[in-house]
Amino acid sequence: MMKHRIIAALLFSTTLSSTALAQQNTGTISAALHRMYAPRCGVAVQVIPSTGASDPRGSTGREFEAILLADAGPSTASGSLWINASGKAYRVPFVDRAVFSGPNEIVDPIVFRLPQSAALENVFIESTPESEKNPCTVAPWVPNLTRVLPVALLARFAGAPLPAATSAVPVADPAHACHTPDAASRTLQIGNLNTPAIAANTGVTGEVEVSVALKSDSTIAGLAIRKTANPILNESALAAAEDSVFQSSIHNCRPLGGTYLFVVEFQSQ
Image (cartoon, rainbow, N blue to C red; front, side, top):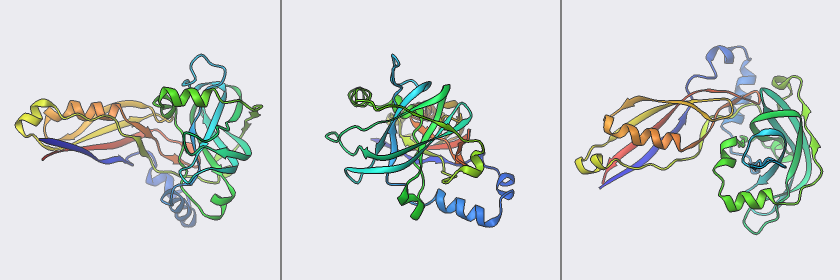
């Protein structure tokens, strides 16, 4: 019998160069790394349906609703959303919004309106009173998270009563205005992985390394086999990568496209 596991989700590869880091002073680098590898923030943006659109899963438009999520149970949160859309950055403040934590909790969307139609790249909570006191790593929403959301849950979110929209305020200088600048790339949802029948029958095992090229909105631009234990395993590894949901890295609050490594190990049992 064969079993498999993904042993490395996303390994940072090419985007944030040593040259870029060298342009910052040591204290700034230390603070950035502290935030990047700090514990994940307790409240995150769960889903962003498009309001008034025929398809709520769409990520291009002008008006959207953000729903906050926490694993710790019902609560409220205040702070500001940071929105990256079509290469520009925006802020949206929010106060005492209910945080969704389970199927029986109320849905309390934050509705925001962009100055013009744009394609969302990512959205995250830039700051809350808690994150100001205890630095944490942001957990951004990316468009594919809404696209893979179960239909019933998306319908509940999209059907929630909507408050008046808040106008998103453009951020003139994102690099200097950003409060939570950096987040490492990662896999948000691992795709289905099936062992090829011929591999299971012949006992072929080993690792396959897949290079994943991501756009700034965390969608896949291309896949390629970087290294393989056996070509028989390649198609399954590529399919698992294609079926996964990724988050590209963030530097100075801006999402960065780049090439990352997705590693699958096929084992005998």
